[in-house]
Image (cartoon, rainbow over all chains, first blue to last red):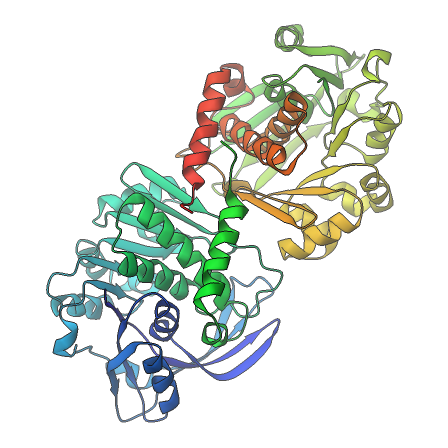
Length: 301
Length: 301
């Protein structure tokens, strides 16, 4: 089943304790598209400037990503440069130029309206809602958000949450949304506010998922070196949504499988700068790491 | 198989966001003995003052804890009072009076010398080594330590590590021991320094275990309320060592089972102040929660 993603496309300059990369292709939609393309055909909605390398869009197309929803506009692509601390969950934004992303107002090609699966990556909740308006009853909608929107556009975030099936946020965002540091209480409040399922990302500690009365936790895969954490959360969402769209299995077991595939994709992307690692992956490598997660967590009965 | 524990016994005054408790029975050896007694007979080595309530020792004895190694000495029992922050992994020591613990120099009853399993809870590494000197070739020795000894008595800690099979520390201690924040690298260095296995406790995120080429991670059980985190690490060690002593199964699968039992005991103790929750547990409740861990983490193959 085809999976739609809307979000940012960027050119990033990244500094981490492991090195740096200049003008790496980035943005949530880019990471998502690369990672989810291993699972199912992707429909990508985004905006790029005249400076965006055409060969990246060609690379994505060759991987089964329909880029007809990627608008090329006069001006420059969103540029972000950031520096990560030794504690990789802390980063400073050194420079941000929104470029054509400042006026991004996603207009979907009509051929995208029947998308059954959709992921609304972190953008203005107004725009996330407008994308939903253009879809004909999708089967499953996931969304992300961030501190900025929770603090500045709370009513819009609340309205959006009533329209999505699954929220994917990190632990700080869950706390900010609910005022609860306890993950069980925070998840309970989020489920009360709309989505049937909430996935809380905990960085190097993994992911925990709550839906109704069930809870599922997966540790992150222990890596000896994280070269660049950028895109980990987007690739998690990509493996998750990609596997759900591929299998169509929305049962608790199907969701668990998808969460592990999300964890697999998140664990790969951080092994190199930008989406480089995703570009060299194979389906076999993905399935092999899935089995590593099984053996990492397997408890004798 | 009988399991020896040496460590502190204390009277604690605890303040947490959920309330307070005055003169609660505490100390690593106490928590350990209560929690491990569900698995196997315990031999306890500690020192208490004249003010220590006799009925606690009687309660422990009724649970299969041999308290003949608990020396009653003139003076007062170690007293600690602490206040936990909203972030429960941060706590302030408000008051500390070492009492008879200041001159603690563990002398084991001769009947304890044949203990096959031993846990050296967090005390001066000199004393931990002296306990080992009094044992006749135990089958498995686990130990804990803390920042203070790593910083102030490093050569003694290093010497001890060469004599133990299993180190149980938290992530901060692992970083302090190795200079590595990355848990894989830190664990590798610890394994190089002596123990065959290292277990790194990550508070609300669970535990990760490294031995040779294998790694096992268990998330913590998600609790809606943690009333008092005191003793969680000691009860983890107790479930771990207790189950290993009960089963005698030191295979990778046996170790995994023991780590989950450790996680179970850690998850129970924090549900109430002091060791209160341990006093009301049954074997059935423990096995039931073990199964909750299985369903919390079960990944479809």
